[in-house]
Length: 122
Image (cartoon, rainbow, N blue to C red; front, side):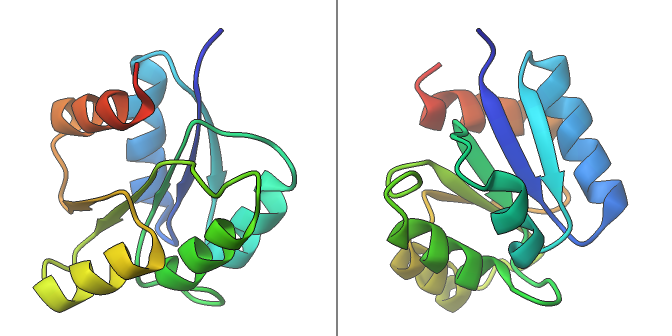
């Protein structure tokens, strides 16, 4: 059975790139354009990994991570931040919120798949 991923980004182009990269590696991918939409898309579904942008309208990546970490279904789900932010203080905020890892855009597709497999234990 294939692993499931959720990619959250307000840029459709970025969602398409992440989605294409993960689908090519055998993942089933769901998409959301911001944190609020991500919570709706997820509902009570279990996913193997969540990849989220930081800066988005309605609900940013940090707030999304904080909310997901409150929920029993997603308390231990690996969550990667995929963002243009490379600042150490932002990374610290991400880690404090519960992010598993941090990838800076533009991303290398092979590296993304490698990190996703590593954190998913695949």
